[in-house]
Length: 466
Image (cartoon, rainbow, N blue to C red):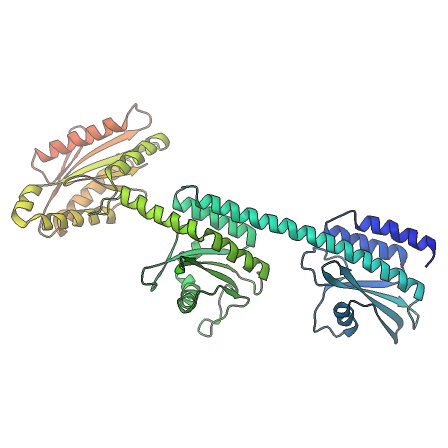
């Protein structure tokens, strides 16, 4: 090969090694081939997954390829030749070798010859070696960037789990991180009950996992983890009993703490074989590093519930109710507060005993929970007094709810009891405070108790008999 060719090869080598971007590098390689051999045809068979060129002659290197010269060049790392008479041409297959192995094979076809020109073969062989080294450097760079990105994901998620944020915020953050990093369509988190018979869907899971359609995936994976704790990597999920499953790519990793199975995580995509094995390893690492922090977050959430929840009625505590009313008065336009008292409760305790008294409190609490929306807050105010706060609810609606609860208590309680209710209301356009809101409701309740009981009294003088 003459000096001019070596000079040109040096210039090409500088261009190829000037970038660590695989896509730019591949583009440069084809530009070089087109400049040097405008009459030749060429193709790259690559084992790399990280390229985005759909407009260049690049094919995935497959072992079932009919062209054995490609496979031989890839496996041996040696240049291969082929020739054909119909049509007449000679082909060269040069492996793209880097420091970490062979990344693919470059096919170059010279037309109208039966033997590949020796001088051009030497140049192309050196070009392929140069391209292979450049590809190796770019691949190492991309792998390093991906490793850093993966570690940042694990670190960021673990930090969030240890940040004492509310559980729903923590789990939603983790779900969004996984969806973004893995391009998953559905992400689910599940906690086993003590006997591991049921798997509870945790907040932060995508809405699909709260539907009946999700049960086939949840039950299948739950069953697998009940047999052993091995992570699942399913490329094409199909069950004979459910031939038309919507999601085919499924990855699931158990949450194990102190060698005990606590729960699991699932991510899914409709397309088969969508997730790579590297993604599977990353998900395992992410869940493994997050397991202890996730368990601590769950325990913290349970502890918070115990602190803000009355142990008998399972209604919220008065302190929690106070905080929620103050928050509502900062952000909402209006709200209704109801305080209620079980009539003649001391007589009930004296007649039936405190155990029946507790049962009655639970009955009334259950009626309250069954008659307020999710945004409504039912609380145990103290003793036999219970309270409800309805954020962003007008007075008329709040009074209807109080009346409905009063009627249901009278109709369904056993032994039969009645309640009295005091209702107060605030609106942003009027100067108000939550202390005064309580005071008005308490005064209304006092009037209800001292004007016959079993009635709803609204702040002011309005009385509604039961």
